[in-house]
Length: 227
Image 1 (tube, rainbow, N blue to C red):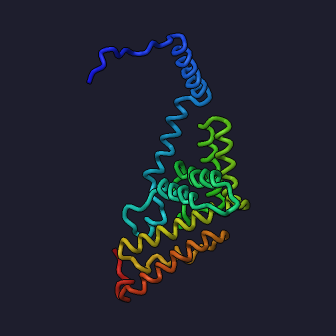
Image 2 (tube, rainbow, N blue to C red; image 1 turned 180 degrees about the horizontal axis):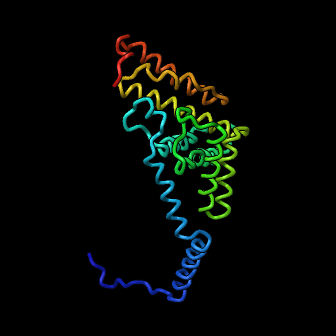
Image 3 (cartoon, rainbow, N blue to C red; image 1 turned 180 degrees about the vertical axis):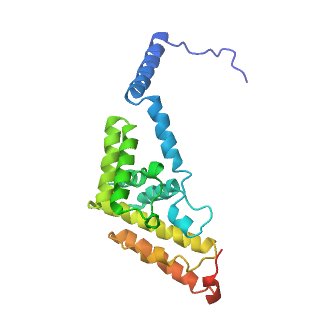
């Protein structure tokens, strides 16, 4: 039923204009601190990670392997499992999202690429400085600090995130073995990592146990086949 007595409420134009001006000033302040050119450049760089495959899987013949962005995303959401640990969950999540950002410029360098650890570190640091320079000053400094803390691996947060990095690799190897008829063929990924945090060590042990259960049911002849 239509209410013929309905009328729109009067709008105080001066108040509305004030809100609009305040909102406009906020947008201007953001753009004055971070130009749109930097926003676009940052988006383009980070966007590369959505399409950049994790090189280690390519060397193992995995078709359409996970991307660097997918790897970092799962690491980040795994921090939601943090409950009793005396860790800053927010910082863990940020570090997970930052630790491989430099690969948007230098690519995913692996031991197979015959690049020294020193050269790899230099390239990563230079790339991170470039990325940080596109962000507002405070945020850029935070990104660099998170990256440096991760690389040094001394703090509890860095140790946890580094373990997350290795756990995600193990989990991904397990998934590839199960989905590509490669049971038992990605052995090196399961035995190349040691863990320094009890929680993730337990996660990894459980995944390895599941893998062993699955591999025990695979005929011996299948373990030498390729997809």
